[in-house]
Image (cartoon, rainbow, N blue to C red; front, side):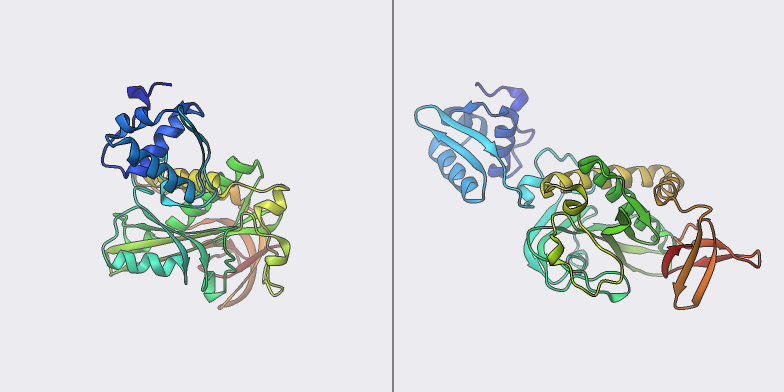
Length: 337
């Protein structure tokens, strides 16, 4: 196969390994000679051989055929910036992807990077977290190599009071990604959980740095249980938990899921900035299947029951209680009654 202009990388500014992977992908399994690769990449055939060897060491399946060239078989399922960046043309989210093997918490790492000036849309991923956390300071179990631990740095031109709207954006993106990759039918549980078959498979934790009328940055924290086995869950969970593997009945490609999620986050964020919160709010409510449902809420302000009549612009749950007065609930645990 001769490498045509249509299969060449769009820019010479990309790292050489990324450009090589893009060429292999565009070749769709065809044998690419060392000479063709060298010409397309602007390097020597020796450099091609060295970088193919480096890709193999990273888990890429590439067959070397003497006197013919190289055939790309498959990428690794690791969450690497090299692989996630392939084919992802982001407007904002995913223009920069940082992957680490281990960290205390991707939210903490993203917060430090934001303080150091990381740009809008920077994505932070870890194979393992030693101090993963959920809402209200709860621990988020984060074993290595099976799940998605992700944080996204955003610098939205909105007021701090409306920042909770971005939690809805995260939830809708995760639900859409699950639906796209597995065909499961996820449901969103207020305020920040995604359920499949009434079991929690994903949680969201958004944090921000702001002043009275200015947001410096928001960190969208997203944890998704993808290929976690039953014996990897702790016994003291507050809410029944599961994984896409357990609910789908088969392993799910973390790479495919993460690519899909980043693409959805990018398009939803762009839509949010251009069209506002209302379309997102309506989809969230439809996916939550919560409007006009009677619920019980346990919160720091006590317990109450009521009928859900909507979601406020700051993420508050609006309840119609027995006294006829709508009440705003900012945090708490919800169950249907």
